[in-house]
Image 1 (cartoon, rainbow, N blue to C red):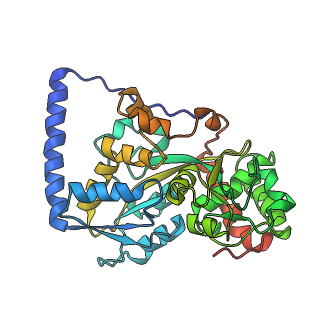
Image 2: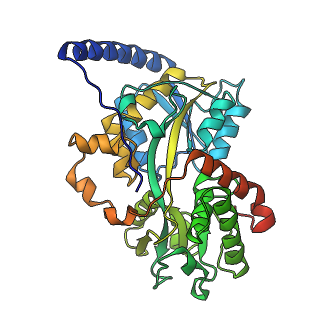
Image 3: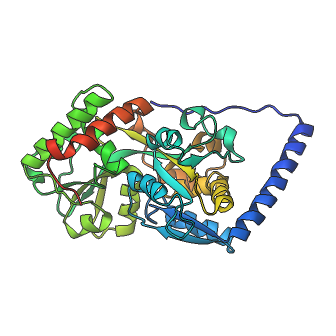
Length: 367
């Protein structure tokens, strides 16, 4: 199983006092500058995704002088990148300050000059494998692809990807995004490919397309962007989504209908999402303050409350910062033992294969 490891700093008491004083001074200066800007523009942050509603509320409570302008909560990672490109010369409310996108989008955004570097105070507790060394992007949380199932309509939930092809699941299976633009949906297709024994990277992407071609031809695939509401209404009774979204959806529906959350036996793909600040951010200081909040203990625990594994999870656990009642709500660790974390190269190759060939191979217009 993938394991994050962070750096361990060795500081004398004196140097620690100096470092803390400097960080505090920088923080006070940053807070003042952010409050002077008075606004932060986010994009693609649904309140039921990864506990973001409570995280946003926490930031507002801490910094009431800063208004959060939330753009297009249901946008995909590609939409976020395009929003930066489209608003390079726009300092108005349609220009995002920050983005939260799939891991594979980070290096490309950096190469295209769309994001700017910034290292938060807790930088050293973010694993090296999940951040850009220069600070252009950094992992925020991760989860695994799962099946969220409406038990009223699906009394026998699927246990693995191959089960989705059974006749009993006709008009039942949906992705939680458009696989031509959404990282979550792309990873869902990729996971299906891995479950068929395909090699990581392009091969798994191609194999995943063939799986969804068969799923669509059998009439089991529903070309609708699935959400908790469509699952509850019966439009998409089996939803392929990140485990944290599925668990949050289960809580939101509160037994109406009853929901099962299944981590498949094979093709268990873990996905890391990343944060970055737009190179053209109209409110750069508010953006930096937002990052400081997200990577503080409070912000990280906010994501964990939303069933995401925050990127600083190991550091928080080591230092006894995670309440036991929060740990008790998470799925058992055994469910994650088969999880694989695709490399950036593997993700990039799979993403290209899936986004370019979905229409020609699967032919389902997801919307």
